[in-house]
Length: 418
Image 1 (tube, rainbow, N blue to C red):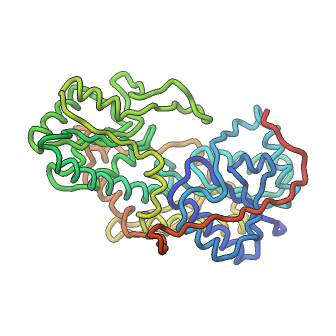
Image 2 (tube, rainbow, N blue to C red):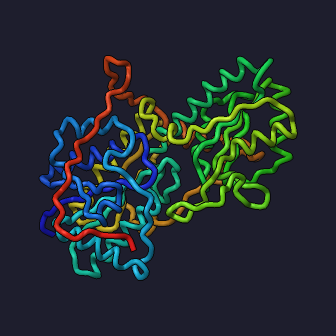
Image 3 (cartoon, rainbow, N blue to C red):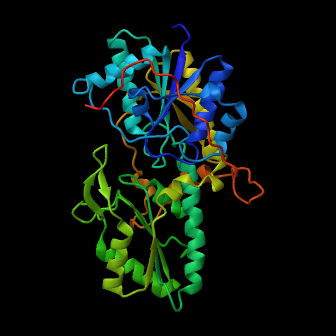
């Protein structure tokens, strides 16, 4: 393959370290003499021929991406369906790539993004266009198959454990005359990895969180209320961490709002207020609940150093794979030991990752269903190690970068979604 340009795109919910991956991709490509375009707002930017020329950015700005949260080029939730029903969109993508001599496509995202990269690799072969498509792992949900962990998860895990520890100290201070139950709702529709990370906040008996609710276990209302009641009576207060995807005894989302997102996933309306109302009605305790929402995935100020290094490593490896012609693969993290924590990057076929979901192993959830096991702690603890602080300026706030994002001149007619 003659050396052409590389197109990088970000997809789905962003993380505290996805820009670190972008930084590594761009700098590695520059080192190899390859020009990098970025698609504005993910795959939609590619379809719209809305491309950004990253060569217009100075290297200091590219390097500053490594400590800047959010998605520097914009992201999207737009699912490309199967090749037969949406062939025109895939053909449009190839048309855009051909018009700009883009020979490498790197898609930084989760399960659906891996599927998109895989499908694009197939349609390019069908249409006779030489293209190497590589997926790059990213998701705070930590639910990608094959890889030991997902860049983005270590930082949200660190933030969650820290938030639970600090908030619980506050609640404990006021519990005698005020709040008895504090509920923190965290992300995780089908997999309870983030909720599990909250368990790192304490490892002693009666240390918070006292109750963790996982999507992998249906809620036993009576057992839950009994656990809260006995904890309050013994400790004085109770900290509960719940995944947004907690289900009731019938298997229904406890907080399903009735609508769907672009990927067809149920839009959840908030499990914490539902649990709070249940506690108030059945136990009469005063409560507070919190929904960190975007805060948990954007908290670059307390990012995990391990997570940052892994985010950079998959970016560098993705470029190496692309230039080597390793089509339809993804760089994944392989763990060789827990203590000391050792890991490496290896290639894995996208076909083994796309549209697959890794849930919490049964052995990671305590027998009573309300906490994590020692095995889970051994897996999780290394992922939050180290602090990767951003540089702070004279105003006391982090110094983040905003790119110029200079547009590439269009060569094709406008595209409109069918």
